[in-house]
Length: 233
Picture (cartoon, one colour):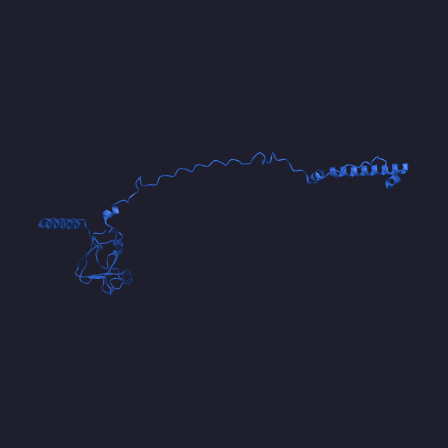
């Protein structure tokens, strides 16, 4: 039990020493300036690459201090609601997490004269240097096969339904006349009428019968010619 505790303690001390060795002290305003009204602190902050694990070091005389404030108090130079305040001439603040932090000098008028700095801490070098994991070839989706065009559907029109084989419909005019029954001409009967009938009485006159026959033939010829004209229209 004691041996295990000693081993754990030794490993913890080694980890702390490694972390301290890897941490970088960032002197605010350095190397040619400091935490004062004469240094361009904004230009210094924009030139730094501050990482998690670094230490932010403020060095200043007794007439200054360090006040960590919110973004709104930073913009308005108001030290009355501090997140944390420091004095003593040398302040080291560890940057333990990524993000932005805001520091001003709480002495009256110094913040408005430029003693304010916005610190943007990035992730540690080890995490920022690791490349983003790219999908392996086995995980990448395979390209889809190009679609195979389907064959054109075969025509299902039978020869009987084909427009080329379908006989043309007859004309309405000719169809009506062709389908109608043609009345054959009535030929007068040559039989001798029975005595006593009206026809027998009139047939005794040869001239009257001949005239009647001629009229019937003329009527037949006129009707037949009229029918031929109708069929020719």
